[in-house]
Length: 171
Image 1 (spheres, rainbow, N blue to C red):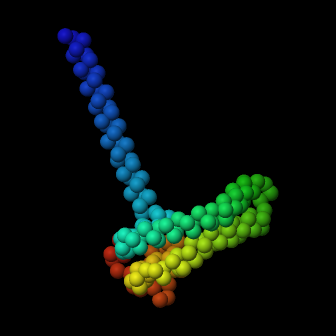
Image 2 (spheres, rainbow, N blue to C red; image 1 turned 90 degrees about the vertical axis):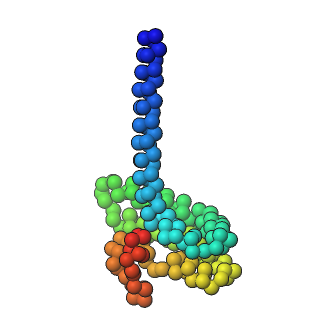
Image 3 (cartoon, one colour; image 1 turned 60 degrees about the vertical axis):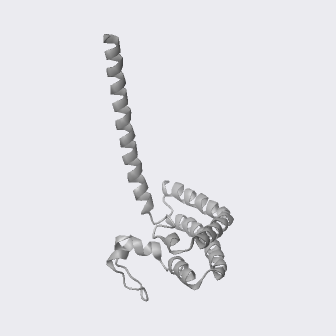
């Protein structure tokens, strides 16, 4: 009987340990996913897909994916140039001119890849209703989106609609 009590006690301890680990893992994963959802990199972070019909959203995602895959070579070249620039930055003597040149080339390749996506989106928006085209254009053609985030939320450009408290809360 005492062996049975020991076995039950050990089983209880192991189960409590596993349950605690599972809860901890769930909390960490939830925290990481919350950060990902608010990342400026995530395309649908402002709910763009929620403002489109399911058919239009599926079409837009397909167009974006196809265009992004067509720009993969350019993005790979840009990545290689940035790796090379980072390696040069770690060497002595420091050659800022060469590093800037590599960064400029990388930005050029990234711009080519992005322009493929933007061009494909613009060309394929003709099949969408005007309200959905407006939604996509308002998101996609907004100038300096990432730069504005770096300098602060209240950095509005001329012609931007005034921001209300609900749009600031979604950022």
